[in-house]
Image (cartoon, rainbow, N blue to C red; front, side, top):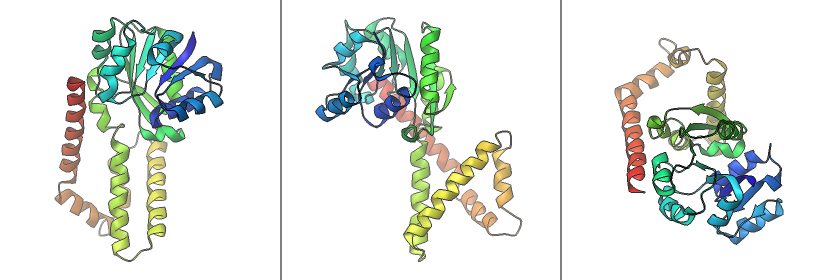
Length: 264
């Protein structure tokens, strides 16, 4: 059997495929995607290309279901009678029991990745069913470690974690978008403002990563000198209930993930 099968070569499926090729030879990887262009791309890389979900599941040990939550029901129907030894799912909000209810006691590893996986700088939360083999757990950890940071958590927090690493790139992008639009309104050239904002965010993130034991509030305090400019901005954010706004946004994100789990 192939070591890894990938159902869907979209942004996430393609990024995970890229990571898998850093430690697996192409002949150990199978692919299914309904797109003819994606099939041709996979074939040009030396990957095994299959004509259906069921054919791939029959040929591969671990199958990554890189599809939307809305497509899970149809996929599981097609997988009946063709259950692989292990399933790796990245469908937001869909619990492990959705797979086992449909397919029996198949071992399942559930992942919540984010889009920076596409450049090897992602963050992935993982959990697994109790019947997963140790070698499959280690394989999933190795795979995602090639693409960023990995954390194993209890499945009960897999919807909550979407607001920590899954959806949060959009939070950061939106914040930068708002800052950029304000800078342009003030007459700063857009290209200059964007470059400064992006590099500031990257540098700030690296400072946080380099001092993991340091409270984040200390980083805030270091920029907010008493009587200075930044402290005035932070006070406006506090008075505008910025923290409460983030909490409401997180709650809406988590609630939708839970709805997807019930709906699909």
